[in-house]
Image (tube, rainbow over all chains, first blue to last red; front, side, top):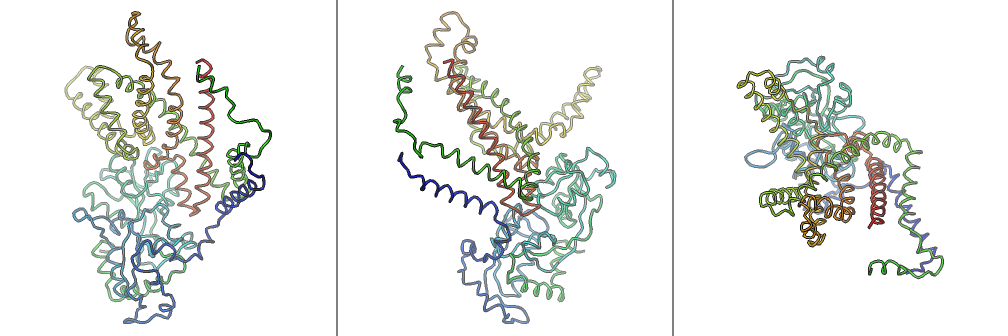
Length: 293
Length: 288
């Protein structure tokens, strides 16, 4: 034990340094080429061969749509972002626009959605690594995100608003000027970016998810939440008579579904979305969940 | 006597220089640290991440430095109550220790921050309103109107995190103090009492000085553990090191950079602190 040869130690030492260097300098870009299937078998009962990219690449048409051949796709949802996805209080099941829209999309392109609850924080690296086949969470399409994941076509355009308690009297400008007024938002969202553009960083509190931010608003810890107008409506109907919108900060955010880079699902979902737009199905789902009046 | 004999025994035969006798763990750790420092200096991503995260170190240290002394004071008194023969003190202390130790720290933090503090503020305001309606004397009116206008903002989320950590760790410290006090032979207390000392005087002059010396290592460990657990305050959106790491990762999508630098900063703090604790232990040992 006491007499271990120097070369052995040098070998172990250099091995460790190599491991550290490779893990430390690993560019995220190198992960892009990694096939998403590496983690899929854990998440789905469907066997890995369901990928079968050769079959689906020239889409076998089913009434004009690409056919995914009854494949099970894992759909990440947060279940904390009304009206897109949330937990139904009585049944304990997930519900929302995302559930209805993805189910309808899957009906058209012949796939079986399997909804999985995922934390928003860190979702983009997870999507990049192919941990889920699809992310449905009212995600804003941005250039930065496009560099590491793929997006579907935009399905709705939203704006960001300032959600406050019902008794708020200040206007947006007064709000910005008052150093004592704090705003909350969700970590890693475009709302966080907009909040920091409009307010000094030290007045912006980034919470784990929007329910926590709205809770902080209701308990007087912050004075406003920077949030998309649709989810602002969602939270207003969940807390009737307690919240209101005082003003708009942006008006041009396009929301889309997220896929791992190079996913074959992107084209299929786009085709289904387009047909749902044309035959009015999308509008019906939008009306159900208050995405349009 | 036996102890000192054991200490003079050579821990290993002196057979001259050997590779295995080098402190390899320290060399490897040092090499890793140098590598990270090199990355921070040479790689723009690492440098920006470091500059972004270094503000979090201040907040993390502030939270730890405030929460730990409070938890030690709580621990001392609850520990005394746990060894007390008074049924009331013993019961209250035992309930505190058993309940708090059985609740995950993050649940405790959320409970205190979003449950108990808002209720406390509401009760304070209600008392203020009641007082204003009941009394007319000027001093009292001032007092109650202060109570009535007491805002939840006076207890910031960071302060609530500190309170939760102090209460949570207070339970651990109480058990440490209890064990320390009970490790001192009962005869010492009996001897002190028979010399005419009161219980508290004997505690203060005879038992506690010896107990504190014995519990210093576990207290030091808890201090380091508290520093690490201060990362849980991230759920309250306080800009400590972990929160800034998550913000950094979310805005750049660069996972390794953010977490490598955060781990490096945490490790630097804990290693320095454990070295300090060891130094303190050695100093107090000389006295013994």
